[in-house]
Image (cartoon, rainbow, N blue to C red; front, top):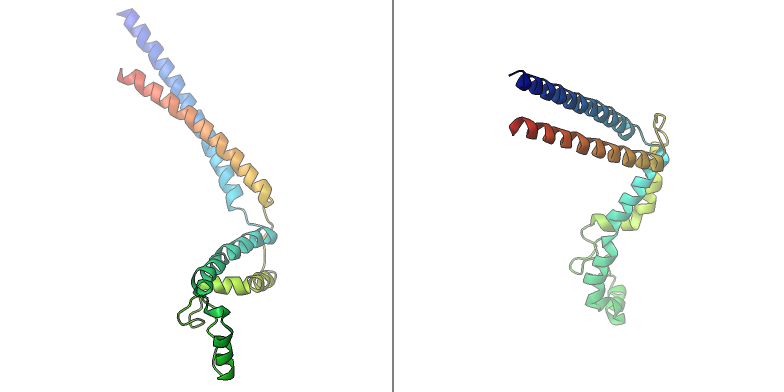
Length: 177
């Protein structure tokens, strides 16, 4: 009986050590998550925000030339001299889809991608002018450094989480078996 008690005591001690190790890993993970959140939540520099603005405007605008090519240019009427000449001499409005890229009722609806295609640089400039007049807190890390730091922290968190999960599975396996 004393052998069983000794084995149970050893198992209890070993289990407590594993639990302590898991708690230690949890504390490390929590500290890294807190650090990651501080970096992620820190304000951007205006120049970094403007990188996002430029990319967003570009993405919003990118479908307009394709739609124009597929819908209006494919129609071919835009190449016909006499059609344009008749509209001009008759005082009408040309059926050129400046603002929507569509053949039917061109220019009636203003599609957002056309708006960003036509005025993207102006939007960017005016937005930057507007934010230059706003209070701006001191930025955290520059964007490139921030991305690198977050990538490194995520890798560390993932590795610790994998180690923690492995220990927890082993502990459960010992208790269940």
